Image (tube, rainbow, N blue to C red; front, side, top):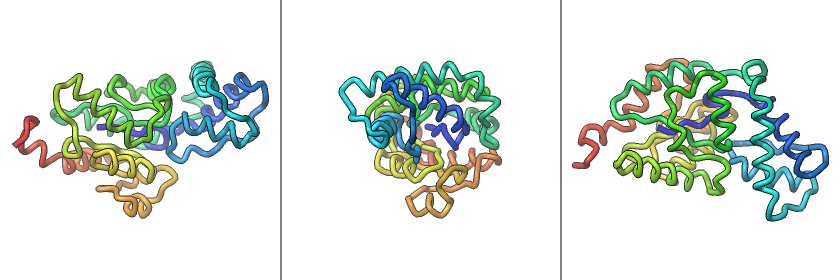
Length: 238
């Protein structure tokens, strides 16, 4: 089970923007004028576009320097997450309920760099049921669909089970999350808690669409429905 982070589990946009502004200043020596909207994109992509729209020609060392500065800036502001951010409705109960399903391991598939994803979830006590070692993160310069496959490979190495569309579920709020799941090979639960409406998530190909995470039983039922064929035949196949 792979969770998107921003606008699926938490909303910490104010702190994120401030961290980006600080990282931009550190790397370029200039104030940030415009930050491109995330729209489900990874931090690596946002960095390059933000440099471009602010008139900075990207050089080879810009991305690693920027991501390092972003991690530092966000860590410096992690104390503000609870005050200036919020946990999405039902997130904690949904994570806890899904963790009770037999054979389920929960991690994240997020455009956020790993260090910041950990801070975001820890700030709201959402890290307890998440295995961060198996996730896919924004510093890994892959399309999100490929990042999903990287996470599946990590899970296979750790758990000894092949992960495919039959036993992998992504839950996220954007049409990009849906596209990544469909291309990468996973069942998809769309949550209309972010910038994509329920109709857009359905049109993009989400298998199941929920209004939010406030009904933990619905979340569990959705996960179970998407993995039922695999569960019925067992982890080792037919």
